[in-house]
Length: 321
Image (tube, rainbow, N blue to C red):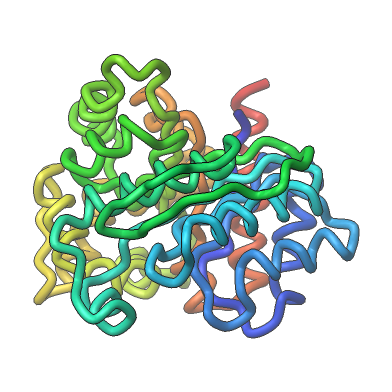
């Protein structure tokens, strides 16, 4: 599968996403990914692109379970599949305990189990309906009217082995973020396989990877902090990084950014060097590499991020020829 491209921020208007969709439509990238947005909402933004004639495969990495019942999530995902005529990955995650408490009154007691229950319910709705589903995330029963549409995969955000085992049992796609390739190979994929035992196929892996091109005026540590700062302050992300051998402390995001660069988790270099580093993810068992130009976008704007992505995608296409 060709690499994919992430629009990494909440857009104020879908027009800013149009050039990214056009780049994907041009064939260098296989899919356009977006995350949760409470500005121009992600499903609606992708539908807007389709209305402009930019009909591309799409992915959500990741939207937040407490905001949407799984039946509504299934309806939204398959609506995108109908509007675009292209496959959709509907990725979900449990959200932070603070947001869950604000929306539900209390955080999930077992977030990984809740996420697995949510994904199971959503997959059931997409496959024809559910009956008497009850888990910590939701109660669900019923079905949507049948309709023809492009394939919809249900994804779960996966950082640590416990979530990987749960995702292995129910998800179509495991979506990782900022995970070193060796950690994907040695920790996450074995846990996914363990979870999938007796079920059938192991979920395929989509890895979101921070990238930037080297330039005389750029400091990769500054770019890494700009692009990954919120995650470097989050205990679950920094715990994952430490498990992977990357020293990260939520109380010291500057040091964490430097560690991302030094370890190569923040992939920085010439287009050819970045393409070579990203090959490590394929060799580790990743099925879909998702380029995340957040650092450049935040510091230099949309056009600079898009230019980086186009050069990296071109180098990756050339390396595969």
